[in-house]
Structure formats: C-alpha cells, structure tokens
Image (cartoon, rainbow over all chains, first blue to last red; front, side, top):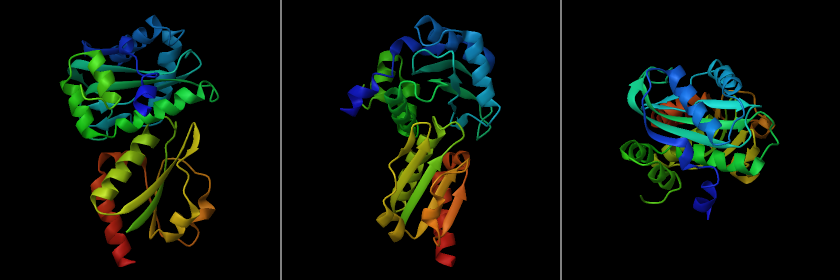
Amino acid sequence: MMELNLKEVLDERVITTALDVKDKEEALRKMSGMLLANGYIADVDQFMEDIYLREAEGITGIGNGVAIPHGKSKSVTRIGIAIAKLKQAIAWESLDNQKVDLIFLFCVSSDKDFAKNHMRLLSKVAARIADDDLLNQIKDSGQPQEIVSLMCGESA
Amino acid sequence: MKIVGVAACTAGIAHTYIAREKLIKASELRGHTIHCETQGTIGVENELDPADIKAAEVVILAIDIAITGMERFKGKKVVKIDTGTLIRNPIAFIQKVEKYISKN
C-alpha cells in the first residue's frame, strides 16, 4: 500500500544513474535542469538560489557519499525528488568530510500548505535514506527504474 | 530500556525523518524500546503517547531547533543531540545514552 503511494513522488524521469559533473554547482544545476524539463520547477536560477540558502544553514552531506540538498522554493510547481548517481565523486560539505557520489535533491514548495499529501510521502522517502543497505543497493543499480523500485521497497 | 524521542531539523524536510529512522534502528539494535515523534514542515507525526513518555527512562531530543511540547518532559532525564551527529553515528550515541543513564 505504502509502496504504491511512494511512486507518486518518485519519478524515473528525474533520476539519473551516470551524472558526469565536476563539482557541486554543476551537479545541482544539471539536476535542477532535469526538474525544469519535467515540470517540477519554473525557474532554475531561482531554485538554485533557494538551494544555496538552505546549504548555508547547515551541512547536507550525511556521510557515506550521500548528500541531501533541498530546494524549498516558490519556483517549485510539483513536489518531488531528483536523484543522481555520479560518475565520479565530487567535493561536498559532509558530516564525515568525504566526497559525494549519490545526491537526493528534494524539490519542495516554500508554501507550506502546498500539496501536503505529497510532502508526507516525501518524508517517507527521506526516512528510507536512513537505510544503509538500501543506499548500497542504489549505488550498485544501473537504471532509474531500478532506483524507484528500491526506494519503494520492492526487490529489483 | 524504554526511550521516547523527538526529531526535528531546521528545514523539517529530510534530516528529521532520517534521524528518526536512525534513532529507532540503533535503539532497537541495542535492545531498547523506542517511540519517536517528528516535528517537521508537515507538523507533528507519530505523536508521543503520554503513557510512553511516563514509562520512558530517557527522552532523546534529536533536534536542531526549538520544539513544541517540551513541558511533556518535565522531570524526565533528557539527552539532546543535533540531527547531524546522530545521523553520523547513531549506535555510538545510544551507547553514550546507556552510560549516562546507568550513572544517573
């Protein structure tokens, strides 16, 4: 039941398994571009600005090569999450001072009443990121569809 | 031991929920019983039952911001940690809490 619901906020069109970027700025810009192309945000520059506002508040690298930046922005028109596996690890402010090669970019409206049911689903997706075994499976996976299945708790 | 906890981060979008999962997993791995509430952008979820608070030997606050409902923990042993430190090393944190409780 819950598994089916999570699919409402997981979208293979905004998941990439081989993002080729040299730094954080480029990673965020390319991931924002994916969100723009698929109708999640209206403006890449505004969205990027809001991501960096959150980045200034605290570290979003949570260790083991994983980062969870969030864009809480008025440019968001649809709630979701962009996921990128990177071809090579990049520098990122992290709890364990390690580089990052897996990014979950939360795409959230700054209007707190916007799509509350989707926000609730997104919090369940966030909870899944606490599972180290799942993260390792994602790092080994080759297809966006596979990542959606793993995040939903289905065996790939 | 019996634990109750609250998780809350600055944005209330991701760290809050990751911290809750890590806290629950680490507590259970160490053989404890835990109930954990979240206070995020979507409001309070998994709200603590007053009976669980009463029975708890310790209250763990994995928080980066002020939370609501602190009066519920009056007279209880409270251990506070930021969500980042908890996420980074949940088992080590629970072991610290165990030591603290055994000494106090």
